[in-house]
Amino acid sequence: MPRSAGERTGREGGALYTPEQRRRRDLSRWTLVQGVLAPLQFAVFLVSLVLVLRYLAGGEGYQAATLSIIAKTLVLYAIMVTGALWERDVFGQYLFAPAFFWEDAVSFVVIALHTAYLAAILSGALSPRSQMLLALAAYAIYLVNAAQFLVKLRMARLQARDWAPAADGAFGGRP
Image 1: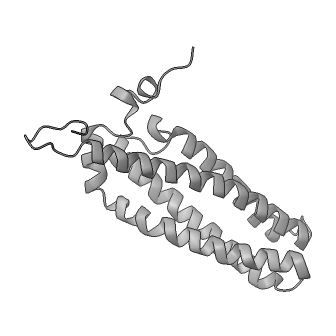
Image 2: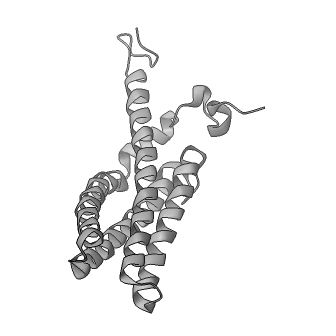
């Protein structure tokens, strides 16, 4: 029988954070770093995606596309390292905290594909077209992962709204 979200996370009602985890999240310097790196990574992704598609469509701009994919990969590595530090601050472990297990798992697929791309350009194992197709595969999984994190961000905002102090100072649901 499938377990409820609350049973999977150890939190009543499947809440993303306990009050203590929410406090640690709000105090962690890595929360701000993640808040800056996530949109930066998405902007780099969009530019890179255009350059990769331009190369695939017309055969022009291989070097620009390659440099953009390398930049995207470096930002990805930075967000993964700082994300692990954030997870340690909030949940007490570097990765695979129950509340972010699947996001972390998919992140590793994204990292593996980006790293395979770097290995391909360094080794010359793939043709330029195949390299770009590998980058597109990495980007497709990245979009899935970004969507996962956007869902969690929405959950956190809804939870924060539900935990807002009531008029009597108690924490609770909506009036």
